[in-house]
Image (cartoon, rainbow, N blue to C red):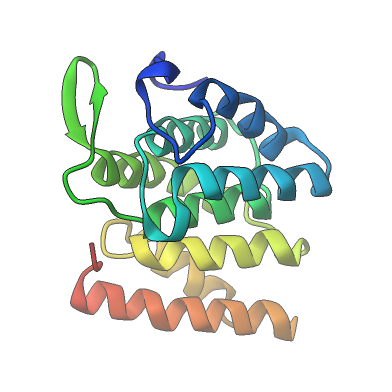
Length: 184
């Protein structure tokens, strides 16, 4: 499922052994809503706590992006985890990918961008929480993925007021990102 075999023991998380994180990723995408929410809480604390990005985030972003690319639908908890990873930064943090050290935040952003078409394809306005998750995630990527603005414009006139509100807020932010660039 993932693009590379991760040596979890070489990755850093806030406090838990990184070898525990794959089980939380599985619960995040396959668990009940309660299990997914609990898994998101653990992953937030361990990989992107209060804006601090840990190297384990790279493997988490890879896992979630690969899940989406393989046709799996990301629920609101998984989308929230991606948004938290995308928003976090640790200057100088690098992770080994294919034997090369790469910037952790840049790697995470690239993997999430790879999955954008699949995330947009499975966005479902009938599932308001999941759809809002998409709307929270995608504006930060709008300068690198033009299909995001198309997606948001297509849904801007949705008949459901909560969907329309989420889309219009995301559209405003996405247009700002396109105009001014994303804020690393």
